[in-house]
Image 1 (cartoon, rainbow, N blue to C red):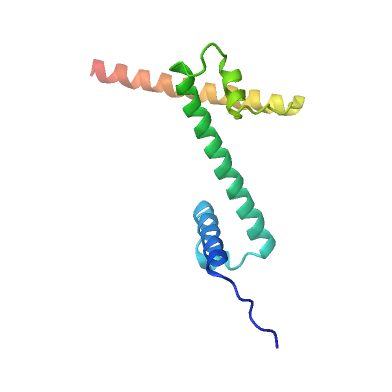
Image 2 (spheres, one colour; image 1 turned 90 degrees about the horizontal axis):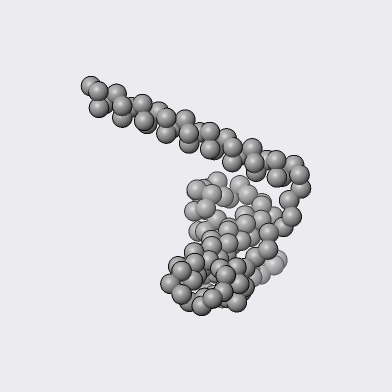
Length: 130
């Protein structure tokens, strides 16, 4: 008969934190998480960790933009200032289909914003004339 694996408190606590992050990110109950396999859980934990790192990086970039505007970058451009902080990330080149998809999403978003703005203006005009 196999003996249970002894896990120290630090490992158990780290696993519990990861488990809470995954369940919170995907809005899962512990019962539904129990249906996941080890591979699915590992992929989800990795994805959540990557998203947290990216979110923290974006927060740092936003904060550095404020600092740059206040003169922390001296005479550097914002891109140079980000490079000096180690936060600059080159974008991967996009294929033509990816570019077309981005343009299409941007145009549909712009059209939706325009429609909503026109509807808001019409509503305001009706309220003023009523």
